[in-house]
Image 1 (cartoon, rainbow, N blue to C red):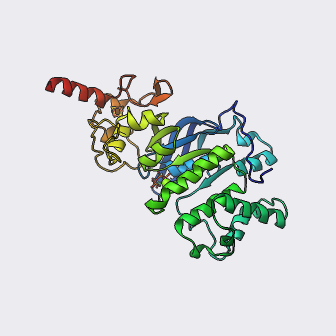
Image 2: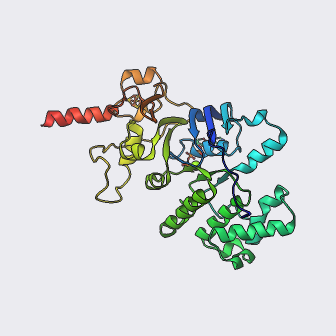
Image 3: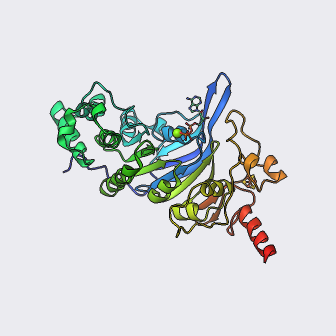
Amino acid sequence: MNALASNPIADRDNAISVDDLVIHFHTRAGTVKAVDGVSFDIRPGETFGIIGESGSGKTTLGRALAGLLKATDGHIRYQGREPAALSKAEQRQIRRDYQIIFQDPHAALNPRMTILQSVMEPMEILRDGDARQRQRVAKEALERVGLPAEIGRRYPHELSGGQKQRVNIARTLTLKPRFIVCDEVVAALDVSIRGSVLNLFADLQKELGITYAFITHDISVVSHVSDRVGVLYLGRLMEVGPAAAVTEKPIHPYTQALLSAEPLPLPSDQRDQRRAIRLQGEIPSPLAPPSGCRFRTRCPAAQSRCAEQEPAWREVAPEHWVACHFADSEGGPLDREQSIQHNNNR
Ligand SMILES: Nc1ncnc2c1ncn2[C@@H]1O[C@H](COP(=O)(O)OP(=O)(O)OP(=O)(O)O)[C@@H](O)[C@H]1O
Ligand code: SF4
Ligand SMILES: [Mg+2]
């Protein structure tokens, strides 16, 4: 059997269930509410995209999903199981199964180690097999990510950014993960090679059944790779739904604003041109998020109710969830404004 073959994933459970997750950082300036009550599931074998502006809490959420940060409150369950309730051996297994790959491919590699040593390192830390087995798995992983065998003898500074990111992917694959958080994994790469690295992630998913959480602020990337997308703003989810629905017909004013800031890749792009909404000002501080709806200080449709009441998390269409007082199956408040304007202009 192929040494990299993944554990089959039981499809009776979600790969991950996040339930009212809170992650706060206590700093001298006060409590940073980086993630402040989010709930969603990631299903086995899917790619769940996570988008949002800088500072919205994407990396914090991703690190928590990979088990690198403890929840201040709320729960993350892995295939229905809470790590704290598991035996030490099961917890160790979860730490292997749930991995994260970061944006900067260079930072993760030790400049004094050869590439082969770097790829073997996670297995050494976890005492996987003997030296010969580790070498075999590492070489197989390098081959799997499309790197020539001789690259194992080289050092990180001798590799391109794309090659280094492939080495990081190989390192992660040696642990046979079920789930990988990909945090801006192509953002630091030259545009010309992003597509081939994204294709590698897609091939690995098909072949090994790996589930991904794909964090990015590049909407074209997220719409290309995701099955479903979650939109994060100031530590809260604003919208979650099928990728096509969220990226082509978003309902929440924040998602609409994020998308209208994106240049359209093709003249034939299906996105509705009437949704040109300027995102004004900076994202507020997570030390003191606005009352009620967090987006209200920048929302063109905000009303007094938005400051007083936090919008409920509602399923406005099948699988399509939105947190806005004025959203329903017909669309969001800005859609209605536009259709009123449109009718008045006729
Ligand atoms: N260890 C920490 N201590 C204190 N504050 C933190 C810590 N880590 C993150 N933060 C703060 O939490 C908020 C969310 O940060 P996070 O890195 O999750 O955002 P992000 O969405 O990944 O942003 P970017 O797109 O810039 O990567 C920010 O205000 C950040 O300054
Ligand atoms: S609840 Fe109010 S402020 Fe929030 S998105 Fe909806 S209209 Fe805008
Ligand atoms: Mg980040």
